[in-house]
Image (tube, rainbow, N blue to C red; front, side, top):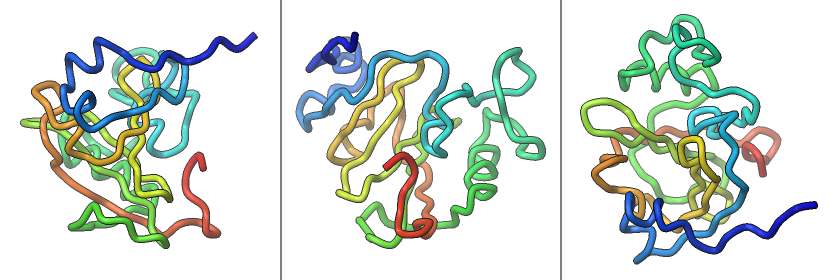
Length: 157
């Protein structure tokens, strides 16, 4: 039996106040088996972080999960390259890496132009833009990357 998803999450709204003002929609129940990096590449079975931590996955050769270079390596392995705009380009799918001194989160752009995020070990959300996630915990956008859609399709769409 599938329970209806909640319309709001007070903890998310407290952590990221922009979600309240910009709007968002909860798209999945809480699922601690994957995180934002996994979600961005379409893996709903692994929690991607530091391979030295038991139960987590990190691609070999990508350095530390605590560095922007490590996160960029992950997305380079998945066919992403540099991009300087979060604007919708229908033939490309984009990701945005958030953080301050180190990466904290990654969001993925949908074909509609909206963005989706896996919130830690919590739920997946859809938000209209990147600014709705800019906050003390997530930091700001550190890097945007893009890749051509595969056979006209995006990850998990």
